[in-house]
Length: 78
Image 1: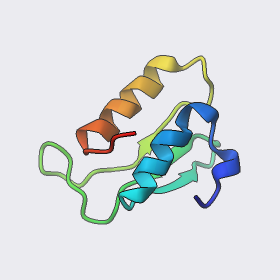
Image 2 (image 1 turned 30 degrees about the vertical axis):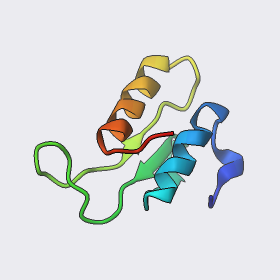
Image 3 (image 1 turned 90 degrees about the vertical axis):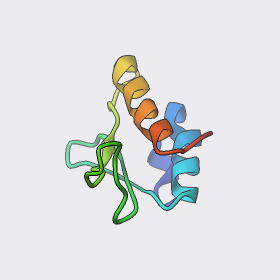
């Protein structure tokens, strides 16, 4: 992992699994954790998949669960 020391504990396992599938981890300019899919990854509608951005605080638990659901729809399991 490129920046694993900056990965929040609640995301570490998901980030490891995503990186094993070719996704890359980084942070937005406003310091939100972000996973970028491999080039050419399609979403459920056939459009190109954009990055999955997580909330930067643990209090945003619904946003984190929604982001986890997006990863699971792409077959990433942890």
